Length: 340
Image 1 (tube, one colour):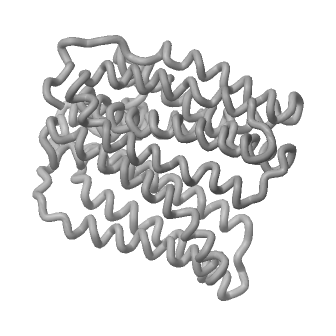
Image 2: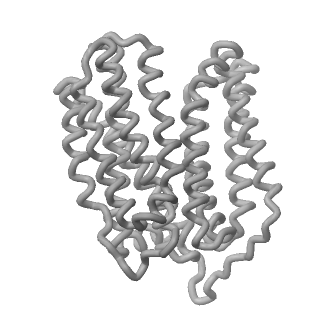
């Protein structure tokens, strides 16, 4: 994939997801839908999603000059937080009105529309040049990890990202147990506690570029990366009633605001530090590592939640998150862009 044009790869990944999801309503219509099929569809969609994410960043780097990458990544981040705000209510309404199978069909069609939209991009993409002295080999699959682990800034940043995302996601199921079970929140209150604060992510993404222009990329990266790690520990102090709901919403608002600032700055830093010929492999390794860490930590915290209780396990994750800023990159004046 590294030495192919990225737009066809993006279109192919969308079509794979479209076809995989389309098998669900088709199997349901013929009465043969099974759990095994749903698991296989999930695996295929996840693999295509990793491919799409890696190829999209590499494609973005070929389309835009370096000075515009932060603006583009901030807009992508804004779009992601917008879908977080709008998506769950629309999805819930669609399931209620149309049923889950029709909703999966609509999801499949969305990937088809995405493929058509990418196909309509008019910018010319040059064909990447493969080095004649380096033929394709199975070891190329590890090149992304080799490059990241050899880079003094990307290596700790990958560990920071994997640990932060994994620990935050690991507490999600425990929060549901704590809020819906022990504290007795209604489902709509639980949804509100996490949907409304997503507006903070949208605001953070919009402020990312102005903040970098004023304070510099490294300062914003480290400050936002540090501040985002301070919030989750407070979730262990959530109590019942309106006060508890407002506490959770306030913590989530602060968390997602910091993430909204951090994510586009981090994505831009990663792209600028990675040579064009290595972007796809590097980002594939990055995504796989982050998702594997999330899966592992989610399983581990499920066990801890059963042994220690949901509140204690959430507190433990919050304490460990306080150490993740130690893995943020140190200043590198030779790579600090001006005016971005």
